[in-house]
Amino acid sequence: MPWPPPGARGLACQPRAAEAHAATGAQPSVLIFLQASPLLLLVAVLAARRGGPLAPVLAALALAVPAAAASLAGGASLIPFLLTEALRGAWLALAPAAITAAGLLFHEAVTGEAEAQQAVPRARSHAELFTAVFLLGPFFETVTGFGIGVVFSLSAMRRLGVPAPAAAALSLLSQVLIPWGALGPGTLLGAALAGVDLRAFGAWTSAASAAWLLLLLPLFWRLAREAGLSGTVRERAGDAITMVVLVTLLVGANLLATVEVAGLIALSPPLLVRLFREGRGVPDARARRAALPYLALSLLLLATRLVPPVQAALTAHGMLRPYPDLPGIATLHHPATMLALVALPVLAVRSEGRWAALARAAARARMPIILLFLYVVLARWLGASGAAASLAGALAASAGPVAMPFVTPVLGAAGGFFTGTNVGSNSILMPIQSALAGKQGFPPAFLPALQNFTGSALCILAPMRISATAALAADGTTEADLYRRLWWTGAAALLAALGWIAALRLG
Image (cartoon, rainbow, N blue to C red; front, side, top):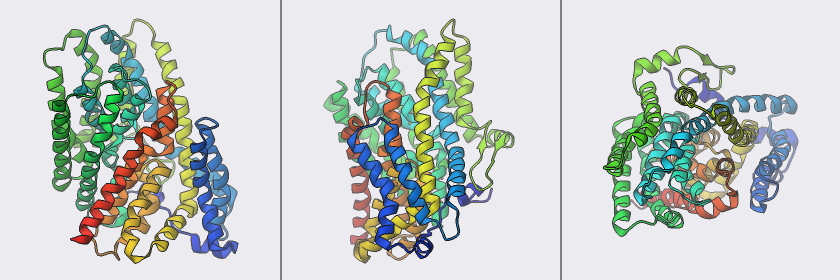
């Protein structure tokens, strides 16, 4: 199949700042402030912690209208643009929204067995917590994407009795392999837009991710202590050894294979070893029965993605693509379909409570889906109008030649924070980042890969993900609770990226 696919062309925005300035007559500083105002207001309302989860994005959307109007090329009509991009945003939001809903349905389907398991005496172990956060959650995120790893990790936190809001914070750490989430479409798109070798792009992304993952261990240990599962010195040493193995496999898989399967290759050996060690001597018939849906889902996802004839057969039929320049949805191959195929039979064999489980899943999915749609529309209005690209260009131009390489991770971080997806961050910023990278004397794929890495890492702190996770937790956890616990994820990502830049510059 040719690359980039039709959807890649539609996702990339083209800078229109010069045309907009000429058409409006606005001073550059006034125009930049106007384009930045939706994002500044978003941060301000989030910091004020008022108005509930919808208030920040609704406020940002209100200011995005004049920002888009000022950024559009001369002759473009505002109202048709806003309506068109809202509909296109709704289409882009449909795929992750379906997975969120189906993931919650799966969770409700297996809850009966999980509740039955709570009656069985079992130890709450530090090792199980590490496995849930850094192996099992990322595994589901790798094969499904769209943040569904949070759903599975949050369920695991509840089974382990982790108190709120530590449970929600730990579940968000399952997003650490976003560049390989859903088998890496955002990373594939980033490499295509940058025009660099995919294997080198994936290898540099994994090198930055390796440093970041090691820097996240102290944060995990602090949250584990809050959860009452701090672990012994030996257990923490085991965490460190497992993490070193994981990052080594991640870098090696990206060097030897491609990004589509690199995450699975890296996660599978340590995950299998951990699950085997933690399960020795304790499984009984009820435990095995409770594990069957998870096993069935894993096998189904792997078979439909790693067996080429199966993948080809499922993607050949049932494709929905209302917009030729945006990605389509292969309904038979979609992760939501796989989740539903496992969840519905599990619900069907229940003796009671089927309709109540469906109602609970629908109720829990409502707010995350609304937030997802609104944030995607915000990203479309700012990205497709040229406002986001104009802001990025202004920031890069103000940095100067010496500091220019260090702007790359900052731009990537901002893109990931405000779009909540590496697809959005790469499509908005990669054309500018790749143009800047050609003048810096680094390996061709290096700076574009840092854009991909930091844009992915900061997705953990994106308002849409933080708000959606707080809504999913439904236990009184607030966005402020999560930001207080997880700020180090963003700081560590920037530290890892800047460290690589300094190392190569000194070298």
